[in-house]
Length: 364
Ligand code: SAM
Ligand code: SF4
Ligand code: SF4
Image (tube, rainbow, N blue to C red; front, side, top):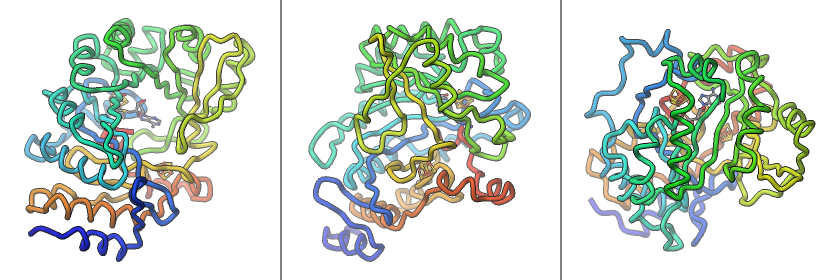
């Protein structure tokens, strides 16, 4: 069945969604939909202790079967519908996105889509960097605009302990160099967990100063039910900034875009910038413009949403592009999520109840 454009608007209006000509749909808190994070696989070659602990993600863990994964064509269709609702940026994540065979072909399909303004969507990728040395050029050629590489330590022994598969840090550093050589701007993500890698903050800052790469420290979050999160293990961003500032003086930078998650700081001596993502101590739900698409096609409107909307059923059930666009507008139009803002008011039981979706499933 084909749905006429007026039915689409009616659908959006029915659910309270407001579609503006160039910004697209707004949610119940008047937040636009600008980013779509797409998890292209739930598998990973690392077992980071805070994300896919080996005790849970062991040999017997039931990862998704191939037929359960969205195909590239299905991802393309859902992305097109998201762009029609105002999305400007697509980020591929996972699991480890570079493990998905032919991921460059998916990038090329996405790069051919257009935003509401008629531009190519910005295409970013978050990776553990293990396969970047071989993939960077092909990714750039296919249309990736920038990459974020996760690196939690420069100390090889600690890095191996944190990824828990004995992966050497020099190979990730080689991947970062390959991305730079391919012309891809690089950001680095470091999750800081108290008692594990909080001693690495200064050496990471020192190593990446002056390289042009932006290093971002992320507060350890209570995502999922497997990492045994506790507030004591969170190192507040303010502490991280104070530590770096004492050695390499910093000054705050203004945000470059509304909804930016990282608070930016520049080195006073001009040797670059860092960012801190204070998901726990300074929530940014008020400007959160991200939706997340899981590997098997569930759309989540919050990292901490307990349920996703099954878009795969819709796509495989024969929905037209207009119906998909209208459904997305409906879903976003009633969105009211703001978990990180209310986290501190929840009891540990309520928190555990809310935080069920694993980071490796939803992609961070
Ligand atoms: N495998 C890729 C990687 O590691 O970059 C992409 C997926 S990973 C789930 C995306 C990001 O989420 C990584 O930067 C990772 O460090 C971060 N992450 C995972 N678990 C986290 C947690 N509990 N709190 C904060 N960040 C987390
Ligand atoms: Fe894999 Fe990334 Fe999770 Fe580490 S953080 S286990 S690399 S998905
Ligand atoms: Fe966005 Fe949910 Fe995170 Fe708040 S808790 S910033 S609404 S994803």
